[in-house]
Length: 85
Image 1 (cartoon, rainbow, N blue to C red):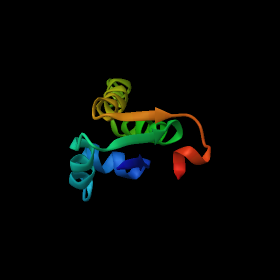
Image 2: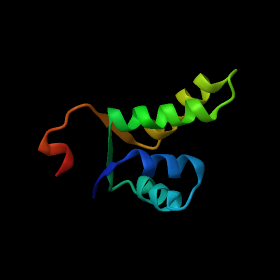
Image 3: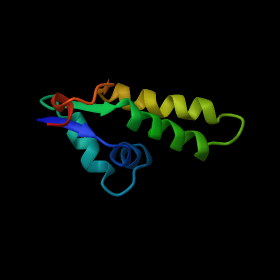
Image 4: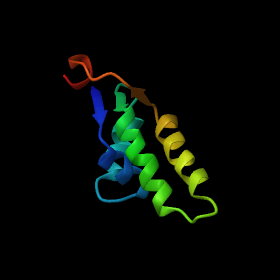
């Protein structure tokens, strides 16, 4: 299955919020291909940045995006129909 994740799904996954377990299960399935647009990853980064302490917020934001990438989510920068169809 092809998955296109929005920022809310990725944030729920990172924070272990409601629905985050479903996202985790989908990401763990090797048969799935997962994508996120760069704008949505920017939202994930900004969310982690503003939630972190002033001294380490940049590291936390970098770690959040790295966790998403490590889970197999590929960043896309295009907005053509091949991404959202």
